[in-house]
Length: 121
Image (tube, rainbow, N blue to C red; front, side):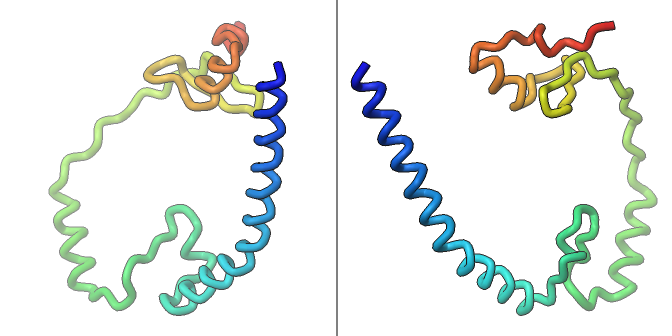
């Protein structure tokens, strides 16, 4: 048992060291990010999902060519939405199809059962 206690002590010590390093480097990292945002003219709006604007100064001709090419493209087939069959402790959901999501795989690895998270009814 002393090996387990020693390892837990080492883990705690390493976690404290990691927290100290993170707090020391946090301000420096924020300054580097701000400098890059200023150099590239990036705003907070640009960082929002679906708001990417690409490079500045694209001509209308280039944009028009892209839309003309897109008109000839095939439409994506519609995807049927499947009701969730499993719900996680933080509100996550999964239909039960495909690979298990990370949140469920992690809980199963901890010894929990997939059936614990089944949506009843």
